[in-house]
Amino acid sequence: MKTSFLNSSVCSLVLLLAAPMSGFAGSDEGMTWNRGDLKWEPNPRVPGLGVARMIGHGKEEGPYTYRVKFPKGRVVQAHSHPDNRYYTVISGTWKIGFGEKYDESKLITLTAGGFYTEPAGVPHFVATPDGEAIVQVSGTGPTTIHYVDAKHASK
Image 1: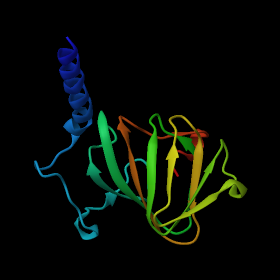
Image 2: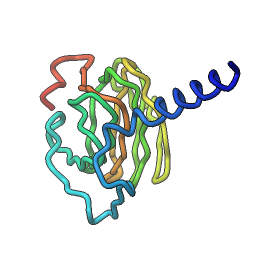
Image 3: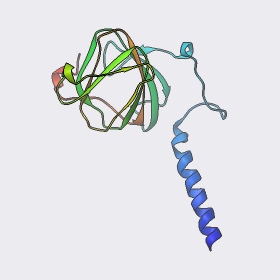
């Protein structure tokens, strides 16, 4: 009886751990990229930004990872996303603040290698006043962007 329970538990754990991998494309050996291998495209959600998709697609169910390139001087007004997100600053200086209205005094500066999380539904805003910044974003889709003030959606 103990052995059966243990075998069942081990099988369940293996399936649970393997489930997120089912959305990943690539070979049996995994996936690899060098900086020059990424294909940059215009960001369809926020005009003026570049995006390089690595795993999945934010509009689809399942895990996604992509990089987003923000030009110098970019401000993204307060918004939220329906999923938990994880960010790593790849290059440049990235400023993140939390709240329902852009407030420069609330900005936290992160540099290359910096990391933070954005819980689902929590309003936040970003700025790149010092130069171009690239961040890597991971989450589980489908996702989208919800601006606190709808007038910011087209900017």
